[in-house]
Image (cartoon, rainbow, N blue to C red; front, side, top):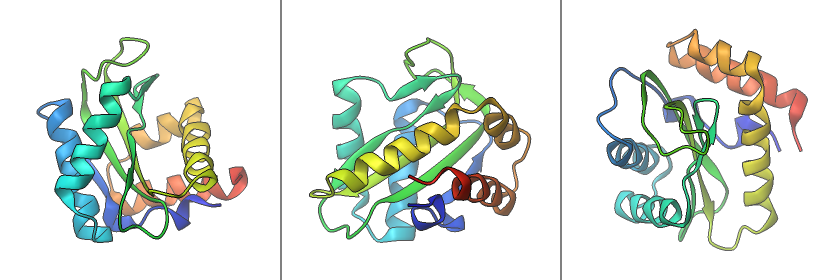
Length: 154
């Protein structure tokens, strides 16, 4: 699995000033709806439900919200790079500026876990986070995300 199979350039945004964690999850759900055809309300509800189980802010300024949705045939993703870090209730209590949301089919099983592991492994690397934070151009962000993924695919 490679990241280029999960995310499209149209599903990447550089956000100037996020209003709140709730608003970021809403905007990610709306973007997933426009790019992948998922139901925006269902996507948002699923992300909120997952957050209620425990925050998906994994530390070092990174969050990986994820949810399973009816109607999807494969795992898809949405990525936000935020210019201003946002309080996200992360495990390390640090604000978040890199958010990669994953949406998986309800019965995806191992594919969902592979995608989650791939994104987690990618964003755990300090050099990857630095490159993403240093660029705001969507096509550059897509190139950074997918280039490294080729060498780290599960």
